[in-house]
Image 1 (cartoon, helix red, strand yellow):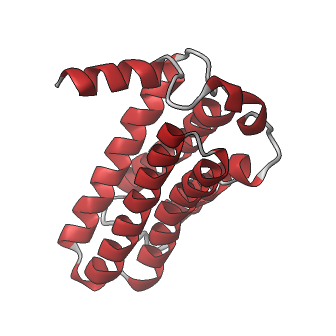
Image 2: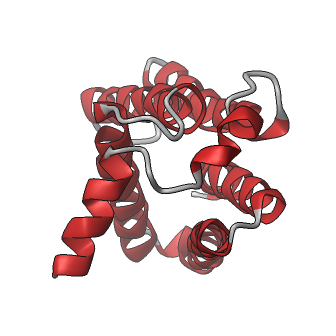
Length: 168
């Protein structure tokens, strides 16, 4: 439990990646930085779908609330991963909490919707695998692998959301 507490403290302090990576990760126009756009795009698409003639969820409010959380997660993630990377900020903790909540929500969707169960499981395993690879790369000091794996993490979950819209 102490390890988890120390890890959360380090994340909130902006110490989840080596500080010498700040110049490479804080560039606003890079594939790594722009990968947050995939999350933003899915959130905006879901928000638009909430007000479509036939929303995909029974409750427009629930769908709109989820969409707003996804858009918020995209903005907070960009702030944590690009703007405040390697610097202490509350956005790191908020990013961790939002990402955890949204992944848990996707797990619930996969568990309850048979039409996307296999596809969803594959997407979640891939996404969590990319997240683990990015963490491992940070611990080993491999900037190139970290950028690639973390950007893939940002793109895989929205890709599942798009497949969810298409095959639900």
